Length: 541
Image (cartoon, rainbow, N blue to C red):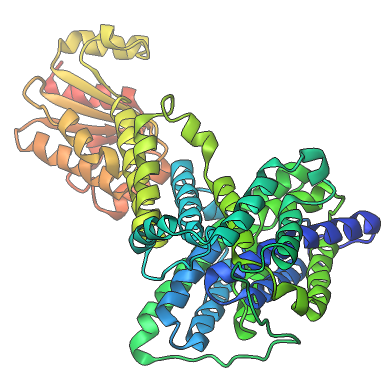
């Protein structure tokens, strides 16, 4: 196995151009995400450098470009709100998140992220987009965005817009106009966020100098930060780290799927998580904000020709060179410009495609999406995703149980089934309703267990019951115990019970649980025909 997944030098020209282009796109976004996180613009830039470099070198998606993203920034802003009194603790959370991602990769959990229900993904992505927009509304008009949650930010927005700073508002609206109106054909050459950043800053310098700016930005390489723990804060730190790790995992692997579609390739999910984890752990060590696979930067990289980890690593190294010589210019970037850029990012994150289909989409999916969206905005991401997954799982179990119960067919006469052979038909006709066959088909699980017991337990209408499992490939524990409950209930009314067609897998589960222990050997048969003959003999038919 190669140390660097997907590395080759057959596409070096495309990788160089892709890396340079991705760096140009990443620069204004990294600055903006750093400011929005509360850690500062330099933390955003170094987040793009460290996560971008190490995720490219050790990840499993060759063409992916990683760095700070909107979702990760929203969570990181919450982390800084919680641990702002001790920044080292906030960056320790980032380190822990990276280590958790590495653990996810080692445990091969990447494949399970693809099982996340779409309404859940849609809900939390739209919720994150809304959070970004709300938090940037005040900076757009020259005010700071307060800490303390979305409700406080919303209250502050009304106050901010009642007394906007004219110069900052003008620059912010200019930035918004550029990112929305910049022609698509020019955007392939120079990305709109970079144009907005440069033009907005130049306007602030030469025409509207009163707008609030970033101010002094540290230069040079960052100093390592030692992990810092406060025993009382450990549970909260672990919870925050888990949120970052789970979100970074989802964000990265969704981008990996997009990269696969664009490049017609296949990523390695578990290796990608290890690479992302290494990048985030090192970012935390050097006081940078966490990141993940970035969809827009990845697509830009691929369209520019990038196909291997060289492009992602080069994008990070180009940003490093820029950082070391950028300080003077970056200090004069207005907050309103970055707010305008981030509002466009927030709007792009919202899943407009699903929202446009709300009227035609299944109602249950829409409810799940809205629940996740509201919980994401007003509570937190883990609660939102957890609630969404639970709701989606319950809905799935309900639908599967309905389908499974529909696969129980009652046969009390030859006319009830076309699957009876001539011998079976003769026996059923002679029994004249005294023998009932419950034929189950398909897998049966816990969702159908109670319903299965109710459907099969009416023992008043027959003298012998045959439970036909010939077409059942799998029974879980709950369904197996439901079969046992049926046997007990029918036997309690002095009726005969026979089980037929128990396969190797179903037999193993039934025998391990002792579900058939109430049946004597002559009441267990390999085929339905044998069970019918045994039932006929027992009834004297």
